Amino acid sequence: MSLTQEQILALAEHLENAELAPHDVKKVTDDYPDMDFHDAYAVQEAIRARKEARGTRIVGMKMGLTSRAKMQQMGVDTPVYGFLADYFERPDSGEIKVSELIHPKVEAEIAFVTKKALRGPGCHVGAVLAATDFVIPAVEIIDSRYENFRFDLVSVVADNASSSRFVTGTTMGDPAQLDLRNMGMVLEKNGQIMELGAGAAVLGHPATSIAMLANMLAERGQEIPAGSLILSGAVTAAIPVEAGDSIVMRAQGLGSVSMRFV
Image 1 (cartoon, rainbow, N blue to C red):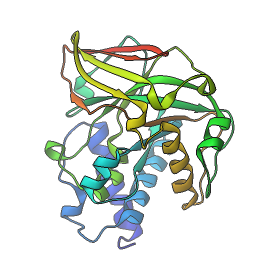
Image 2 (cartoon, rainbow, N blue to C red):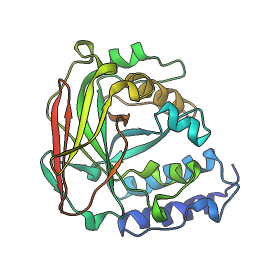
Image 3 (cartoon, rainbow, N blue to C red):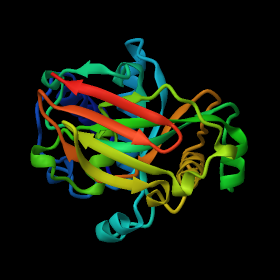
């Protein structure tokens, strides 16, 4: 680590303020070029602690950068993760205020809900599937706080992996009864198909992403608690949205998720 505790706390306040009173900022590595991933996750954890101190409940986690091609492009060999706060969640078929966001984009995902805790190291797909209560379709609304959505990986980790809002569907699926690898997903904007994808886009199988999260958390002495909601990663590319847009995501065997941006 290269940052002092004072710098970590100051960056946490800086980035959380950019989220809560929506405005964009320069990527943090412009001022702290020697920051590493340990520093970045320390900033993310400080943001989480600030929220919890105000009574915000953490309901789960999200994985990002789960495409092999994207990892190769970014020159990394592992995805990144962030946390999900209770107020990030919006109801299916509900409205999302763009005034609370900066430059939102939407992605189609498969969400896992755990019935048992998952802890690494050595967590594997079989353990994930055995610990999963059900899966549900989800749309994540990502919203980097950085100017023009330009950032490096260390900066995005510090910014809680661009987490902002998410919507889950109401159809629960048994992972033992679903072919999650080949599950097709369609993302529509204003009635027009924008993106198509399948579960294999997420590290070959979305449960691989959950196992990787458990193993990454273990490096920090943490686990995935029972009852957690985990967004496994984007099945489709992210598409930008603005006020007036309607989004529908259809997942094979899991129904649909919809929302309107106002």
